Length: 89
Image 1 (spheres, rainbow, N blue to C red):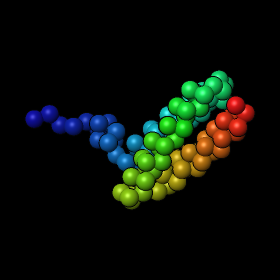
Image 2 (image 1 turned 180 degrees about the vertical axis):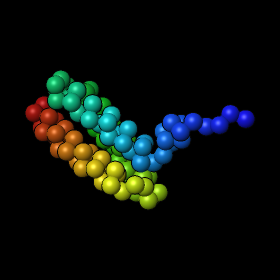
Image 3 (image 1 turned 90 degrees about the horizontal axis):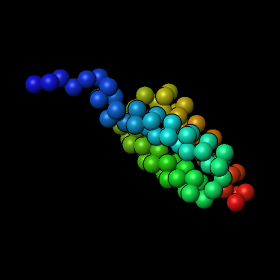
Image 4 (image 1 turned 135 degrees about the horizontal axis):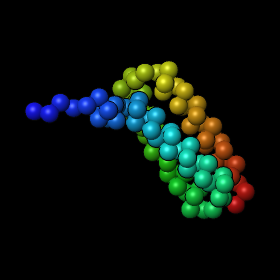
């Protein structure tokens, strides 16, 4: 029987899922800031919603709170940036 690699385990880990979600939010918000169009902004808001769900899951699982806390701050910054961009439309 094949042993699961560490990477596949980490991908399923709530704090890692949250970290990955925040990275996607960061990219989506940067895209929306450089190309402030409705579709880019909508995509970024969807990414934020997904990341917030991942955050709730990580908190419920009592994940590594230092990492989760750092990513939570990054998520808040991204939300503020996106709100600024969306006001300009």
